[in-house]
Image (cartoon, rainbow, N blue to C red; front, side):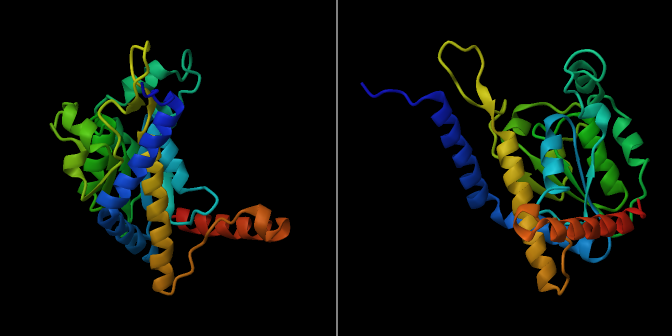
Length: 258
């Protein structure tokens, strides 16, 4: 009898499948999203990124991060992303409640000034909760192109929660599928009631970094040197410190528009 693969290896195989599926199915949409981002950055605008819950992981992967570049603005709202206490103050119950509250998305957007060349990327694997939907709708109403990183399978399997009856996948100009299954978790383990090992972060981070790399190439092709955060381990401490300060100044100068 053939022995079943260990759960750890099953997860790694499914994670690899996610990346391969994105490469084969979404390559053209990644290029399209990168063009939108390039246009925003090249014209002095921002590419804003928003996500609630664990989607914050992908948002912060875009910037600030080694190998990331100025022009991406992580729009991180702590009330719906900082729940590591789990219970008590700023706990998981509050965050899960707030991301379903209509009106909060518009309140978040109202705290910023958006320019004519800005665009928005919303990360939400389900793509149905009111806050993420509202940020997408509000961004479009402000004239921004909207990109979404979401799970097509999960979105199809769930009902909308916003009063507009819209899902993120129906709002965005460019939809990027993180290839996670409905329910997100990838591995069924004998004797364990529910599947384990979510895959949406694998897909979202792969998409984020693919876009980031393509934007760098696009900017260079336009004769624009992107402001990239280098690793201090390979350019030397002094050079890294100079580059770090230069990149932060570039970010600060652009951030005055916010």
